[in-house]
Image (cartoon, rainbow, N blue to C red; front, side):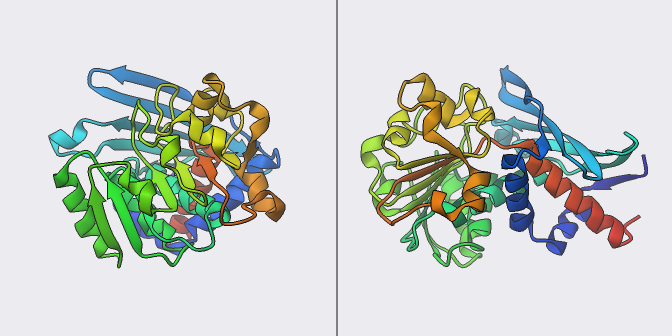
Amino acid sequence: MNDVFRLPEIEESLSNFDVIEIIEEGFVAYSQGKVVVPPVGEMIFESPPGDAHIKYGFIQGDEYFVIKIATGFYENARLGISTSNGLMLVFSQKTGQLVCALLDEGRLTDIRTAAAGAVAAKHLAPSDVERIGILGAGIQGRLQLKYLASVTPCKSAMVWGINAEELEAYALETRRLGYDVRTTLDAQEVPACCNLIVTATPSKNPLLMADWIRPGTHITAMGSDTHDKIELDPQILAQADMVVADSISQSKTRGEIFRATQAGAIGEQDVIELGAVIQDPSLRRQNDQQITVADLTGVAVQDIQISKAVYESLVSKGSR
């Protein structure tokens, strides 16, 4: 192995490329069948609650393949440490040699997830975003507003969280980004005034109900990345005009689409893939009265794209 990179230099490298653009390109390649992504490996823990995901794959004809391990332990906040951690390993697709280890502590997973939320909103959100709603006041909930700023001029937001202390900290941080932020402990208040909503929690019970959702709303759900998590009432997907998956194959075993299919609310024929939506404007929202849902379970091509870009940026800057 040639290089081991740690979080400070990885963070610094992120300013050297457009994260949203490379994630968008990754989704297109995935939907074109150019990416080999084996089934997700995962471990789910009960006491304390947490999970570990192993995602890996390669783009055909590319220089590298990537193996990513990411963890989420949701009671870590009580210990004063991050709820997420992990690393990414970059290998040569030509020799199989380990090129570098990115000891990113889960940061690149957080960033590529936030960028995917921006990609979904870019192609599916209504043309006039009145207010952005965020369910989840943790790391991902904060990053969503940061990256959504690249695709919508809206600077008004409402965030739901589980306690006043985390909401206060969230509001303080995101107001520094120029947002007018309101907070609430009542999830029903979010869809009442927001027509672009992002859910970013590890909930195992629906947080949004179908009769709360107004016409014209877009929802990006990204917290439900295992079979037992759910953030949306399955009837939300049943009433949606469009249901979009980052990966149709992954949505058969995890996420909102999986849970809605299990409940009989939708069928597999009701789902299209985000990469296809990016390529074909006719598959996108056709008017501002439609309800659209994007279910993002997290695909290895996102990890491939961001780790490759980070590594090439670090090498070009002569970090080693």
